[in-house]
Image (tube, rainbow over all chains, first blue to last red; front, side, top):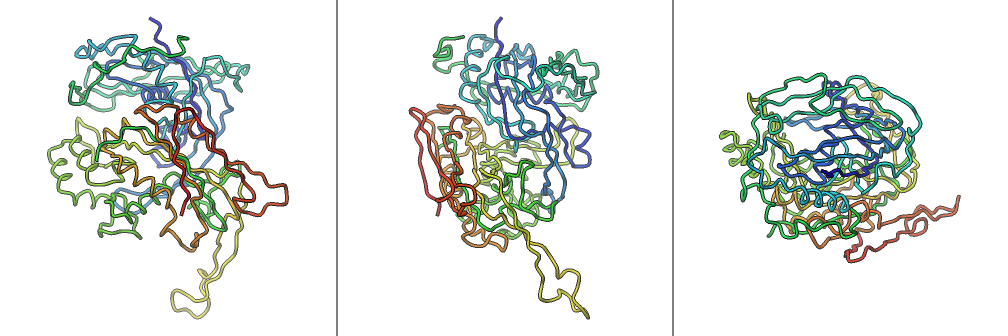
Length: 241
Length: 288
């Protein structure tokens, strides 16, 4: 089943908040995107509840640099804070991802049409995504363009290995695990010549239960459509798939 | 009015002459500068100004600043509590109804989204999040900016004292001249979720075109900050004819002044050009 897509995503800034730095309110970015952040970007390009995106690997094209900014967050109950946020600056990544059926969504089995989702995803990459794209937080606006995985030169292409220690990998949401619980998963990423190959979410060595959470229900006609859209199976006009 | 049907991208060219477009609160209120020396106006600063303009137009706004407050509520929490539909949805623990009521009530929630914070409940999340269709990027200057800092003194004490108080000395900073590019998009899929209409889009357009109206202050005297041009690209479908990356790149602003001969005006020192993409229409507006 060839349902993998690759795209380049780039922006001036990125903030993949290290959860440890959230406690004091001074957010600092991890050096590389988390699996979950890339799932978010890919879902902003295209997503339906019948599919789940799996991130295979990422290439880091630009040198990893940070830049701090002073911010003045408004408190919900009135007043404000002052804090520094540390962003990654001038980032560019190439991402390879594929989709799988969400087997916990048997109710949407009639939507398990491989070609449909693959072609829509391809079209959406060419148009820069269905929703606006951002890297980690929404002030870090980014752009998506079609790109082959090895197309661009990268700063770390011949760099060897680089470790980042234990960090957040992804969430396991109730509609994926079918248990009604939200889990956080952790892993130890390793970059080899600019490429990080993600382990599968279920292969993460540490999993932590966060809290109970109900799975969202989708009902056709109320908050789900997409099985009767015209032109669903139209492919890329260039025909170069 | 009907929900927005076509994707929109926009770019505005903003000039700043002898003003502080956006101070950094943790750096003595110096105008924001990136590590590369470019001037920056944050997205939240721009959204604050858009909200103020929408408020001037008579729209209902959730995030009102203290100095432009029109309904007397001093916190977001109080304002949310004042809305009957929101209260009812909160009691019924219906997050979907809560988000919908908030979108109906306030133009800025429909446009930019909002997080409504609650205390943690068992089995549920801790807040209601609305994701808005209008995304505004931070604006950066085309060239590096020079900052002039001046020492200022106050001519009188705030409190009665024998001699001059220590608070009578201060600093003021300004960007000598800078051309900033504001970029953003309006997304149809999210507009459908918040009920953002074509009319709302037109209000946003007018708010950006007149961004610095009614915004003057000692740091930004009348006439020092201007929207010179606004380019409004409306695609002919929901997804967009071209990616935002391509559309935003159509507007190019180049520094053309010879070294040492800069006159610190947009007309003399910079050249604005607008490229075309086949089939994509562009509305071009002058600022006020």
